[in-house]
Length: 93
Image 1 (tube, one colour):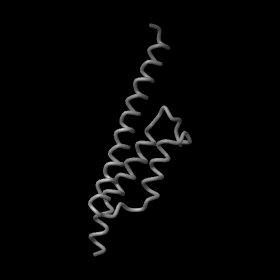
Image 2: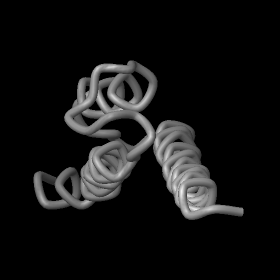
Image 3: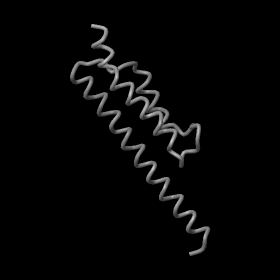
Image 4: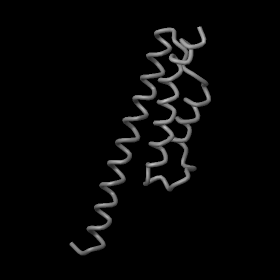
């Protein structure tokens, strides 16, 4: 194998690993929202959840799609806001 083939192989492996992390965070986001809704707790603004889902699915990104770091960041921020929503509801009561 020459250097170009090795570089392409490494880039593909990194892209697949980043996609796997992004997909895992997406699944956690959906499960967190579902769990909060089943428990009757607030899930925060809907636009945060659906915006993160749309950002992950749609091809228009800040970084090109093989680099999923921006998608992971958006999904983690949405997950964080979902997990804080019940805490804010407790403070309001």
